[in-house]
Length: 73
Image 1 (cartoon, rainbow, N blue to C red):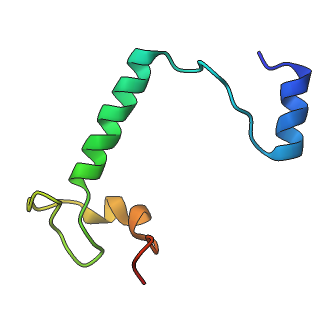
Image 2 (image 1 turned 45 degrees about the horizontal axis):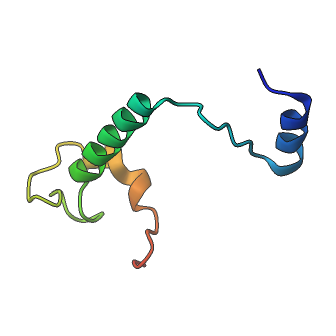
């Protein structure tokens, strides 16, 4: 449950930090999933291969990651 102070902070700033929202095992699971997603992504918008040279079957699933990434464009 959020306190009134937290609600006001969100209303004024558009975000709220919730410390200890996830426990350590949940954070580790999220990190594993994120690493797998990054490793599975195509290396560019014109390449169907991931960083290991494997073909990415559905590169359009990763199109949100290729919208003007830093260093390109």
